[in-house]
Length: 235
Image (tube, rainbow, N blue to C red; front, top):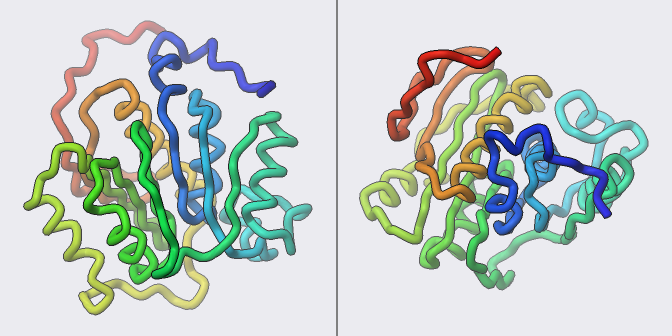
């Protein structure tokens, strides 16, 4: 039985709707590991993660893992972390996604891609893009933050075409210095924004299709329906 309680968020998150959705997370490094934790804390109960990498000492400063996980497969480490901290069971699948990998899309499931390379993202996207699923991914570098959400249940071909331009491995891209990925506060801030979209999906609320921002700054690109803010806050 999980030790997570969501009673203090019930006034603004519909836990009954949230727990009815599944999440598949491909890549559990800087974003995927923290995303797993935060999604569990807001009430998602069926979370499956995929990775083939190992926890290195360099991961400790920017990812959810601790020194005890160094040398472990990330799938085993995250499974242990979620069990030890929250008694929360996740399904962890170790192994690389290849051309031969078979993926069978499921209903009421969000597919999140956190792979490091565009080539790996495109490989996974090509396996899923023709199914009526919800696709999400994020990108980080230094303090830069970006995410995309595509609801393929109601296909917008223009949106898909624009998104695919950004997946072209031969297209323009910004290269970072070797090993320069980001820091944990920036990663966690981005994950919080992602989780808001996951909750919106479960609750049937509009989602933000794209966000581009810098750590600690307002978004410079923000494609989302307008929301009305309350006139007064109940402090």
